[in-house]
Length: 142
Image (cartoon, rainbow, N blue to C red):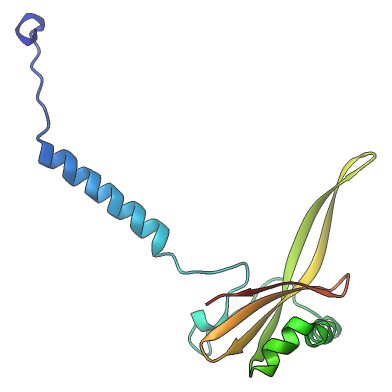
């Protein structure tokens, strides 16, 4: 059939196709698994001392105190603190929700707080709803 059409088919050797496949898999693996674990808020353990920069809206002193009061009043947080953990920092997070109304939908934006509790090599991320005055979630990161 090749002789009839006048074209020759140059097949790629199998080792070249295999090598290309391996390189693609390695690149995808590196892209998915070598990215540092971060959340919306960067923990201080990712940066050497003295190089932490937090930009964007900050909590006021009143909001900081409110977040701390809510934090230490929560029974789950009390248990973690009783085990020797300390509050590393309290940072703002912006929460956006889409709420259905009679006239369509409405976007609600609130400022919550994200606290980090640290005990040795263990740490927990705690989300605090400043509007409703409650701890929303506690997530161990190790």
